[in-house]
Length: 373
Image (tube, rainbow, N blue to C red):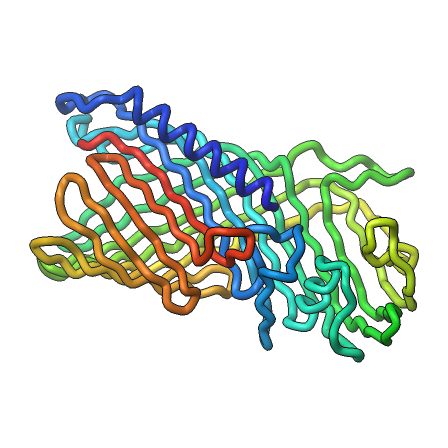
């Protein structure tokens, strides 16, 4: 997951910088103008998203309730029709797109077990733990179509459609109980479901080489007067992830385990009993709902942004300076995160985090370029 996020982030940086260097401001033209955007965000309410597969002894923050985390990266580049284009074409954009995303949801007790596992230690408490968890990972490339912002009075409405060919799709889920009996001994009583297009087993049909995905996003804006503006976005409001054929694993885990491998991790695989079946996999992209409010002043805007995804809530309070070269600063008090932005003509950059090392729970980078029309 960490490698996916970094790969998408690097692609976004490279695409935006190259296009920005190649495109200079020119007089209005009816011809399509290039645009590019790159987004990468990692967010959790306790797990160290900067190093999910590393040692959690420093970055893990125990929670009584569910632990959730997601990592998402997007890179897109394409052409947009300017205001000087024919009326029927104005505002439409078409781009090439790459996306990669990973999501995890665990009970608080399952997260405690995972933290002990990642740190190659035993839990601090002897007893039973709720071992429920689920994950979703996917990656794909394709096309994105963005409509113009249709106006009705002070209202604006737009939509985006994406179609992707998937090269990765995996889901996992466990339900049940894991118990730590002390002295390095564990007992499991749970069920496991795994759908992974990379699994190949003997005597079963091979998985399909590719899957497909699609999503629809809607965007609404309202400006009641010259000082206030409100925006509501629902990204991936409707979506589908589909892999036509893969080998699905359905298993149970019921045993006692008291051994570790050469690297110090628990050796639990002998306790798994199950079977593989050939079937299709269908899933959805978790939607992102964001609400933005801006109060305009001569020197800048006061801003409020609410973002909810995968059961995690963000609330950013900030200030955006007015002018051709504009800076912004935002804080997220619940996560203790800071976000800084810079805008110049069609170029926008935004970076944010709660910490600057591998213990971070929040990381964000947005880069975009669009020719000023």
